[in-house]
Image 1 (spheres, rainbow, N blue to C red):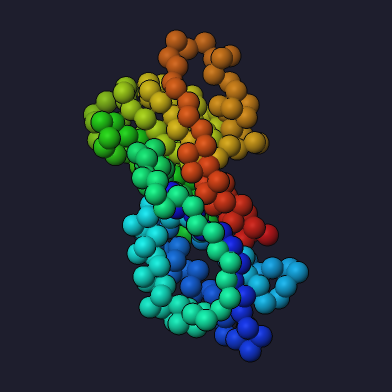
Image 2 (cartoon, rainbow, N blue to C red):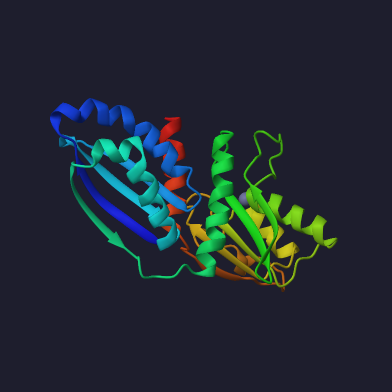
Length: 241
Ligand SMILES: [Zn+2]
């Protein structure tokens, strides 16, 4: 993952043009396939300053973004602006966990587009996607239509088997009690999630596995692209308020 953080300063006579161009710049950048997250927020202490925080899946995606931005209206407008940016991770290759979580994040975005809480999940076996899902209980009129359950159903149907051993589920947010139960029934081998869910998370936030009388256990990994996955949730609920 490549991250960039810092501040860009608009000259007073360009402030209005900057504010106008910003919405399109944010939308275009978030739509880039390699963009994990992109935030530009006004600085409450300085009306001319904007805080930039962005993450891309790898150095190549970051370079594609830089090239596109440079040629865009935003790039031309802000070319001479003062900026203080710090970039990290340009020499780090993307891990398999991160690339699958990136797929789950893209699905979370589809949930957000339909007004559903942004959670996405992919089920992987032998490094292949065998099921994918995003949260859709409201549109589906289905209280069980969490991202994990949708992904499990799709995988079970495509494999012709209600059990999915040797599979790994990647989900952007810590699964709830219902989903943990379903993952046990499906015999999933490994659950990788991004951000913790302090209210309803049933793996680390409110651990329930040890109290459950099943002999199946799955491995748990947390925090893969955790900050980015958590940002999706906070952005969604901030927009609702
Ligand atoms: Zn759930």
